[in-house]
Amino acid sequence: MSEARKTLLEHRTALAKNSDAYMFEVTENQIDRLVRTLVNPLKRANYRVTPKRNFELLKKIILLVFKTQDFRPFFHVEGTQLPLCWNRPSDWDKNYIKYEWGHLHSSNQRSISDLRIDDITNLGLYSARCNQHIQSSMDIEELMVYGGILAQRISNVLLNRRILFVSEEWKDLYSQLKQTGKK
Image (cartoon, rainbow, N blue to C red; front, top):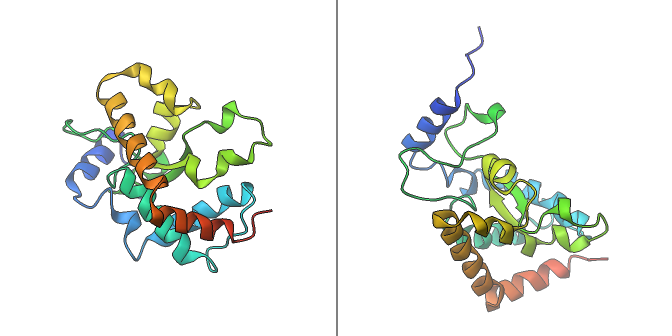
Protein backbone atom coordinates (compact mmCIF):
# COMPACT_ATOMS: atom_id res chain seq x y z
CA MET A 1 0.00 0.00 0.00
CA SER A 2 1.48 3.35 -1.02
CA GLU A 3 1.65 6.28 1.33
CA ALA A 4 -0.61 9.23 0.47
CA ARG A 5 1.19 12.20 -1.03
CA LYS A 6 1.89 15.00 1.42
CA THR A 7 0.21 18.33 1.09
CA LEU A 8 2.20 21.53 0.76
CA LEU A 9 1.31 22.45 4.34
CA GLU A 10 2.60 19.07 5.58
CA HIS A 11 5.79 19.50 3.54
CA ARG A 12 6.44 23.01 4.87
CA THR A 13 5.72 21.84 8.42
CA ALA A 14 8.21 18.97 8.01
CA LEU A 15 10.83 21.44 6.71
CA ALA A 16 10.23 23.74 9.68
CA LYS A 17 10.68 20.87 12.13
CA ASN A 18 13.96 19.67 10.57
CA SER A 19 16.91 21.70 11.84
CA ASP A 20 19.02 20.28 8.98
CA ALA A 21 16.47 21.01 6.23
CA TYR A 22 18.72 23.53 4.48
CA MET A 23 22.06 21.78 5.01
CA PHE A 24 21.17 18.14 4.28
CA GLU A 25 22.25 18.21 0.63
CA VAL A 26 25.63 19.80 1.33
CA THR A 27 26.72 17.26 3.92
CA GLU A 28 29.63 14.98 3.09
CA ASN A 29 27.31 12.04 2.30
CA GLN A 30 24.86 13.98 0.12
CA ILE A 31 26.79 16.62 -1.84
CA ASP A 32 27.46 14.23 -4.73
CA ARG A 33 23.97 14.93 -6.19
CA LEU A 34 24.70 18.67 -6.29
CA VAL A 35 28.08 18.01 -7.91
CA ARG A 36 26.39 15.86 -10.59
CA THR A 37 23.69 18.47 -11.25
CA LEU A 38 26.29 21.23 -11.60
CA VAL A 39 28.11 19.37 -14.37
CA ASN A 40 25.43 19.90 -17.05
CA PRO A 41 25.27 23.71 -16.91
CA LEU A 42 29.06 23.88 -16.79
CA LYS A 43 29.29 21.62 -19.83
CA ARG A 44 26.83 23.90 -21.64
CA ALA A 45 29.28 26.71 -20.81
CA ASN A 46 31.94 24.54 -22.49
CA TYR A 47 33.85 23.46 -19.40
CA ARG A 48 35.04 19.88 -19.62
CA VAL A 49 34.11 18.64 -16.18
CA THR A 50 32.92 15.31 -14.87
CA PRO A 51 31.69 14.44 -11.39
CA LYS A 52 34.43 11.85 -10.98
CA ARG A 53 37.42 13.80 -12.30
CA ASN A 54 36.46 17.19 -10.83
CA PHE A 55 34.54 16.22 -7.70
CA GLU A 56 36.68 18.09 -5.14
CA LEU A 57 36.89 21.26 -7.25
CA LEU A 58 33.12 21.34 -7.86
CA LYS A 59 32.41 20.56 -4.21
CA LYS A 60 34.56 23.51 -3.09
CA ILE A 61 32.84 25.80 -5.58
CA ILE A 62 29.40 24.66 -4.42
CA LEU A 63 30.25 25.25 -0.77
CA LEU A 64 31.58 28.75 -1.48
CA VAL A 65 28.51 29.70 -3.53
CA PHE A 66 26.26 28.24 -0.84
CA LYS A 67 28.12 30.19 1.84
CA THR A 68 27.29 33.46 0.00
CA GLN A 69 23.65 32.47 0.47
CA ASP A 70 24.13 31.93 4.22
CA PHE A 71 23.62 28.21 3.63
CA ARG A 72 20.00 28.74 2.58
CA PRO A 73 18.10 28.86 -0.74
CA PHE A 74 18.86 32.02 -2.71
CA PHE A 75 15.53 33.69 -1.84
CA HIS A 76 15.23 32.41 1.72
CA VAL A 77 13.84 34.96 4.15
CA GLU A 78 13.54 34.66 7.91
CA GLY A 79 10.67 35.67 10.11
CA THR A 80 7.87 33.36 9.03
CA GLN A 81 6.50 30.43 11.01
CA LEU A 82 6.68 28.10 8.00
CA PRO A 83 9.38 28.30 5.30
CA LEU A 84 8.67 30.23 2.13
CA CYS A 85 11.07 28.02 0.16
CA TRP A 86 10.03 24.47 -0.63
CA ASN A 87 10.42 21.59 -3.07
CA ARG A 88 8.44 20.64 -6.15
CA PRO A 89 5.35 18.49 -5.40
CA SER A 90 7.14 15.24 -6.33
CA ASP A 91 9.57 15.96 -3.48
CA TRP A 92 7.11 16.98 -0.79
CA ASP A 93 7.86 13.68 0.97
CA LYS A 94 11.32 15.07 1.83
CA ASN A 95 11.88 17.03 5.02
CA TYR A 96 14.81 18.90 3.49
CA ILE A 97 15.31 21.26 0.57
CA LYS A 98 16.29 19.49 -2.63
CA TYR A 99 18.35 22.20 -4.31
CA GLU A 100 18.42 23.01 -7.99
CA TRP A 101 20.61 25.37 -9.96
CA GLY A 102 19.00 28.63 -10.99
CA HIS A 103 20.28 31.42 -13.23
CA LEU A 104 20.66 34.89 -11.76
CA HIS A 105 20.34 36.27 -15.29
CA SER A 106 17.61 34.16 -16.80
CA SER A 107 18.39 31.69 -19.55
CA ASN A 108 14.93 32.50 -20.96
CA GLN A 109 15.96 36.09 -21.62
CA ARG A 110 19.23 35.26 -23.36
CA SER A 111 20.31 33.92 -26.68
CA ILE A 112 20.75 30.15 -26.78
CA SER A 113 24.35 30.77 -27.87
CA ASP A 114 25.20 32.86 -24.79
CA LEU A 115 27.55 30.41 -23.08
CA ARG A 116 28.07 32.71 -20.10
CA ILE A 117 24.51 32.03 -18.96
CA ASP A 118 25.63 28.66 -17.56
CA ASP A 119 28.90 29.90 -16.09
CA ILE A 120 29.17 29.24 -12.36
CA THR A 121 29.17 33.01 -11.68
CA ASN A 122 25.57 33.14 -12.98
CA LEU A 123 24.30 30.15 -10.99
CA GLY A 124 22.84 29.96 -7.52
CA LEU A 125 21.28 27.27 -5.36
CA TYR A 126 17.51 27.58 -5.30
CA SER A 127 14.58 25.65 -3.96
CA ALA A 128 12.13 24.64 -6.68
CA ARG A 129 9.61 27.20 -5.42
CA CYS A 130 12.24 29.96 -5.55
CA ASN A 131 13.34 29.05 -9.06
CA GLN A 132 9.93 28.47 -10.61
CA HIS A 133 7.61 30.83 -8.74
CA ILE A 134 9.64 33.71 -7.35
CA GLN A 135 12.25 34.27 -10.06
CA SER A 136 10.10 32.77 -12.79
CA SER A 137 12.41 33.54 -15.76
CA MET A 138 13.17 37.08 -14.61
CA ASP A 139 16.66 38.47 -14.18
CA ILE A 140 17.68 38.88 -10.54
CA GLU A 141 17.56 42.70 -10.73
CA GLU A 142 13.93 42.58 -11.87
CA LEU A 143 12.96 41.04 -8.53
CA MET A 144 14.10 44.09 -6.61
CA VAL A 145 10.78 45.81 -7.43
CA TYR A 146 9.13 43.52 -4.86
CA GLY A 147 11.02 45.44 -2.19
CA GLY A 148 10.96 44.53 1.47
CA ILE A 149 12.66 41.46 2.87
CA LEU A 150 13.04 39.83 -0.55
CA ALA A 151 14.94 42.81 -1.98
CA GLN A 152 17.09 42.93 1.17
CA ARG A 153 17.87 39.21 0.87
CA ILE A 154 18.82 39.59 -2.80
CA SER A 155 21.05 42.58 -2.00
CA ASN A 156 22.81 40.67 0.79
CA VAL A 157 23.45 37.59 -1.35
CA LEU A 158 24.66 39.66 -4.31
CA LEU A 159 27.04 41.58 -2.02
CA ASN A 160 28.37 38.30 -0.61
CA ARG A 161 28.88 37.01 -4.16
CA ARG A 162 30.79 40.15 -5.21
CA ILE A 163 33.08 39.72 -2.19
CA LEU A 164 33.57 36.03 -3.01
CA PHE A 165 34.34 36.62 -6.68
CA VAL A 166 37.24 38.98 -5.89
CA SER A 167 38.74 36.70 -3.21
CA GLU A 168 41.98 34.83 -3.85
CA GLU A 169 40.31 31.55 -2.92
CA TRP A 170 37.65 32.04 -5.60
CA LYS A 171 40.15 33.23 -8.20
CA ASP A 172 42.19 30.07 -7.61
CA LEU A 173 39.15 27.76 -7.89
CA TYR A 174 37.81 29.62 -10.93
CA SER A 175 41.22 29.34 -12.57
CA GLN A 176 41.20 25.60 -11.91
CA LEU A 177 37.73 25.37 -13.44
CA LYS A 178 38.92 27.22 -16.54
CA GLN A 179 41.86 24.83 -16.80
CA THR A 180 39.49 21.87 -17.17
CA GLY A 181 39.65 22.57 -20.88
CA LYS A 182 37.14 25.24 -21.70
CA LYS A 183 36.79 25.25 -25.47
